[in-house]
Length: 206
Image (cartoon, rainbow, N blue to C red; front, side, top):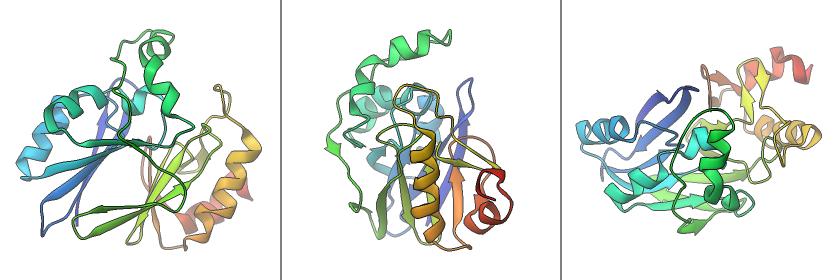
């Protein structure tokens, strides 16, 4: 498996490229900004993007959807509860003093339990709402991409529209924490962690 992490944009959101070594097919998870840098990384590894996967609909994670889709033609996927956010990204970014393009509409609405195949890699969709209503995580081979649901030593904000603290805590306890202590959690901002580390030391779950 090929795995690359890029911190993109002024808010330094983590964008991940996951690729199959055998087929060179790939997915880009959360292309928040710097589309050309993402495309350059894909080209260096000779990867063909089949999917653009959004863990949630906040502008700092999806701001490069349009450019990436225009260039690659990849299928854009998001949970239906967050899909409406893609139409108002420019307004959301403007409230933070930033500018992004609105996203194209999704090609694929993903739900809990769905499986997305990228070559020989199977990504399982886990609905993990709380930071946003349609937040999802993607799990495969000892790795889970958690978006802004869980961070190293913290959790995602729940004060944005559609956020809910109790729902987020439940998502982590009842879904992510069941994946196994050795599973690496690749977060939407900041460093990676493990499920076991967060069970033991995250102050929100003691």
